[in-house]
Amino acid sequence: MTAKKHPRWLLAAWALALACQAAAQIPTEVHARLEEARLPDEALAFVVQRVSDGRTVAAHQADRSVQPASTLKLLTSIVALDRLGPAYRGRSTLLASGPVAKGVLHGDLVLRGEGDVDLDARALEHMLRIARLKGVREIRGDLVLDRTFFQPARTDEGVPPFDDTPEFRYNVIPDALLLNTNLIELDLVSDDRQVSVGMSTPLEGVSVKSRLTLVDGDCDSWDDGWQLPEVRMLARGKIEVGLRGTYPRDCRTSTAINVIDRVTFAERMVRAIWKDLGGTFRGRARDGKTAPDARVLATHRSRPLAQVVHDIDKASDNPIARVVYLALGAASPGEGPTAQRAEAAVRQWMAARRIDDAALVLENGSGLSRRERTTPAQLAEVLRAALASPWAAEFTASLPVVGVEMRPRMDGVPADARARFKTGTLRNSSALAGYVTDRDGAPYIVVAVLNDDAARKEIARPILDALVESLLATGFSGTRP
Image 1 (cartoon, rainbow, N blue to C red):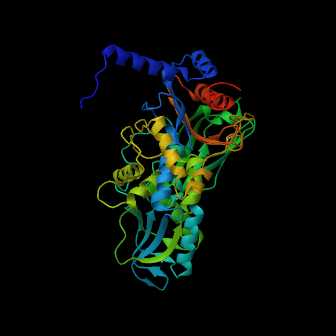
Image 2: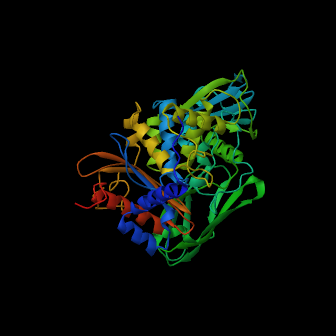
Image 3: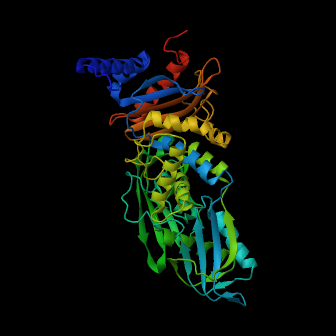
């Protein structure tokens, strides 16, 4: 039997009709907002699926390839829960590479990381305290930093900054031993005369000085005049971090900055804590690998993954999302770079659930990328598959609750307490994706993405919020009651 052929004009007419139908699904209020912002309808792509049967009830460019920003974290979260399990924990280990005699370690002290997202200064101090209780007082060898759980061990080296603020947490490129996320934690307090700076991170020989200029301004926008800090090497190995730019008068805030090489950072932290515990160390820090005969002194484990995914989705923590993505790769069989194995694990998960992965482009699993792409329809299918997971409760609980954890966004609208959405923002992309129930209590999946060079978050977010509000107001039927 041969397929029936249709005239070209009929095929063209069908294509035109489908295009008009898709455009018509943009609510009037949203279309007006797009016009007011001088954004084309093509900048917006969205899909609404009914959970019960997967039927698409509203869509516009649902199969368009888009930059999803941080909504891509939803894919990383559910695949990690399914593949690693909610009880999975990253680990850090402190080891002695050599004998201990009369309080002296005749060898190296090794700090090995295995994707522990909670290895902060307090956790390190606890591990070093246990080493002291086990009789270690003096370290004769070096401090060896083992990051080889991920390959390559240092993906941050030689990589240009994602944008103009490489020093802030969201831009930290992780490795398997991300001690304190390599961040110096600061408190900044100003009056009408000066800015006082407090550093709470223990780092031997490191000081932070304010060279900030006081200005009249809104404390909520304190970083508007911020500039990349300057790091200076001083005499006797001391390091001075100079804060530059402007800062509002009568303002108090806390921040954390990544400005010191991570080998130096780890060495200065270990020295500060070890000295405070009464120990001595005259060696140096270096990257390396754990010796086969090294003995465990202390261990630390991160929180279970079921808790860590809250940081990924509610707090949209990029370094944690990227560590979990790489942990997927480390747990997968095969050779080659860990990120490639992580991507293979994600695609295998999708294939097992019959989700087409053709439009998916992965780089680091966090959405903090100009390369990563998906489609609204694809991400909606991921969200639908997540509801069938044994760990659906853990996954949905990780999404922010609209009107509670997303205030003041959508505050007071019908979506309050009936929706859980993950949001995402890049310079040219704003997105939201998650679950909402209609006025009859039926659950739906909503994925909406706005991509355009002119779509700054101040413009894009209200448009996406208006889309959700409009869809809720019509009960997803396209007409108001």
